[in-house]
Every structure is written in C-alpha cells, then in structure tokens.
Image: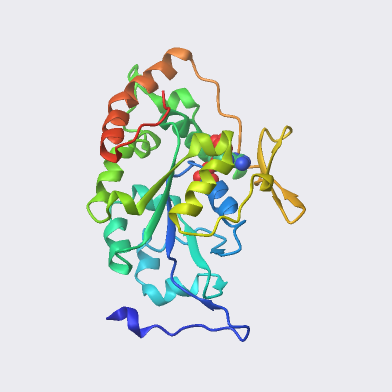
Length: 272
Ligand code: A3P
C-alpha cells in the first residue's frame, strides 16, 4: 500500500517524523489550543505547533501523506505525535480521509456549550476583522434575520454537534473518539487531562501542580519545570453582551440538537 512507500525522515539524534497517532479534530473554539498545550506537558507527547489543515484543504490533501508526515515534529519512538486542526470536526470529507490513513487512530474532540461556542466563534471572526481594519457586523446583526434566529449563520451550524458527530461515527467506533468537556477544562483542567492520558494509554505524568489559576487572565495557566506561562491573549476573550431574550432563543434552539448529541454519544453534558 501507499503507507509502505514512506521515506522516513530520521535525525542524527535518533528522532524522526511520524504520522500522528492521535488528532485533535475540533471543535473550533472548544479549547483546542488549551488541550494541545496541556497535553504537551507530557514528555511522551510530540505536538505539531500550527494547525496543519491536511484533511480539509484540497491543495494540502492533494500533496499526499508524505507531505503530511513532513509537517510533523521530530519525535522519539516512545512518543505519540499529535496535531490539532479544529476545522476537521465540521468538514464532511475528513472522517473518511482520516480512516483511509489509519482506521484504528484515536481521536480527541473537545466540546463546550454550543451557545457559548457561537459567541466565541463570533468574537474570533470579529477580532480577525478588527486586526485587518475591516468592519464586521454586530452580534445581533449576525444572529437575527427577519426578527428570528438566523439559523443559516455558520457559527450556529458548527455548534450542531450531532450532525458532525454522525459523520465521524460512520467511520470510527465511539470508543475511539474521546470527548473532552471544554467547560470543565476551563474550570478545572487537571481531571480532564488525566482522562486524556488514560485514553491515550500514556503513563500518568501530568500533575495538578502543572496548573495554577491566574487571576489576571481569569484562566488556568501552565507550570512546566518551574516555568509559568498562560495561553496567548487571543485565548480567553470577553464575549459580547447579548440581550437575554436572544440568549434564551439560542439556548432553546440548541435544546433538541443537544439531546440528539447526548443520545448519540451515550453521555450528557452540562449545557444550557
Ligand atoms: P474564548 O476566547 O472565547 O474564551 P480554541 O483554542 O479551540 O480556539 O479555543 C479557545 C477557547 O479556549 C477560549 O475561548 C477559552 O474559553 C478556552 N480555554 C480553555 N482553557 C483555557 C485556558 N487555560 N486559557 C485560555 N483559554 C482557555
């Protein structure tokens, strides 16, 4: 098969690039960067720094698996390589493509309250525009159309988790997709990270002392062999204040999709 034709890139110190044995597939704004950074505290994790977009961008996918492998960090044989591209979760073509690479791969999916995710998604796009000095509509302008909730808004669609999950479950058993509770990862990261260690069959090496709450940031930050660091300032931004009736509408809209998602994965989450 194609898989046997790889040119292994081996460094003189014995490390080499390998295809990822696990991928953080999403969801966008779920806390994917936090998850990757926290998991990287483990000595046996080698993480790709930037989002690779191999399976969802046609021009990347067309370059083939050798190109994908070339994007990976150098790692030692005992290490697990991981990359994160949040767009994978909501891209319909991606599950089959990942399956074709490795049908027994273990996947990580981090989700948070779908309404909160919409506001976070909006905030991200808003700031991307601000950075480029481009105008962007207000949250009300994107959320409301003809006096009703604008269900065509992309960010709302991305929060319909059951639709995207169904695509993944056509190719992977539920047991191979570990769902990280993104709301819990914000409030108390260590227990969520311990579960990920177990899922990936890593030795338990990350400790509670690797995390400390930073009051200024309002989020947990990381302590790694004495060095302390928080995530980038673009992570953990204030969301726009919205009218409580509009927020209720959003919560109401996601009620049924959420129920379907809980049924699909046999687990509930503390969402509105
Ligand atoms: P907000 O900026 O909307 O609060 P992603 O990395 O997938 O884009 O997700 C970004 C989200 O990660 C942030 O969304 C934030 O809520 C969440 N997050 C989780 N743990 C965090 C941490 N320790 N520091 C900063 N953000 C964190």
